[in-house]
Length: 102
Image (cartoon, rainbow, N blue to C red; front, side, top):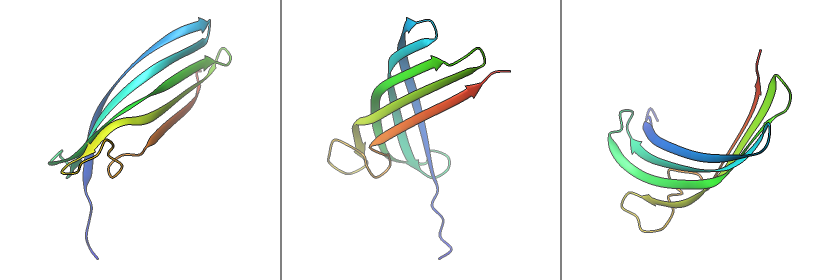
């Protein structure tokens, strides 16, 4: 059709973690995102807050694994009623990182 869809988003996150034993940490994370139509944050489209647990484990001297699972706890699409924004954001966000240090 020759049409393009341009969108952008901006967000901020905060987390707190506790070391259960050396190399093993568990915590909680909060993330806030705003979605916009246009590449330069032109027109507000919606916002969402995600909450969930995090984990980090040092597998060896050179390897680690980190994971987070966030659930949309609140959100709103511009011009719509409701407690979640499922148009601009997912219901769940999962992050899994496997790292190697040299």
